[in-house]
Image 1 (cartoon, helix red, strand yellow):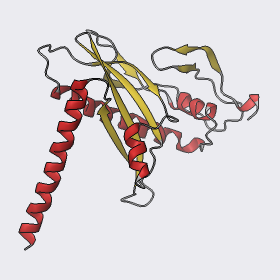
Image 2 (cartoon, helix red, strand yellow; image 1 turned 120 degrees about the horizontal axis):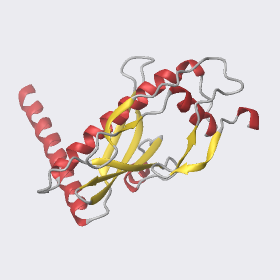
Image 3 (cartoon, one colour; image 1 turned 90 degrees about the horizontal axis):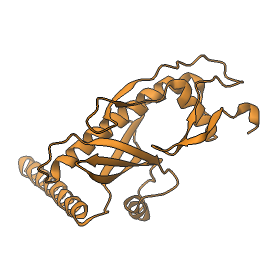
Image 4 (tube, one colour; image 1 turned 60 degrees about the vertical axis):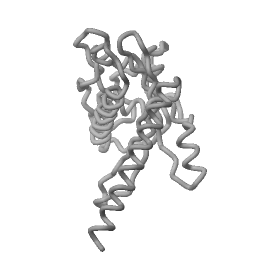
Length: 211
């Protein structure tokens, strides 16, 4: 890809996500005007503050895709941004569910201090599942959640799921705390056991009702 098609970036990395700060500048060969307005998320950014993370504008999102060398039809960018924002809101809700499982007398609201995209680094869980024939995730993020002076890392694997309606994409997110501590390992095992128990109980109830 030549320099004319490469979106402008600043030299400095954003230390909160290790991504170059993309400008709102239109690509030289871009044919559609993309919005430059950014949407405010519900995800807290700082301790004891009302500051929230902002999602990239469609223009910034398009610049990021072009920078990565991904060919993206311009007319689909706004829909992709909507999906991106929706998935991140769902991810945050799942993180809050996990955080509620950790015993803590502190009632401070968790916040996302920083994150990192790691699409080339397959997580151990994803690698294990693909060994048995499961599809690979198309993306991975590591989120760093702070609460009461403690930091916990979460791994998010992004998967494409079978379409329920033709032409309507479906995605699945696997969100869990990284096994960086005995407490995180305990809650991962506990939740896995609860999920299996619910699965078995539901299967047994269905078999009983059909007999």
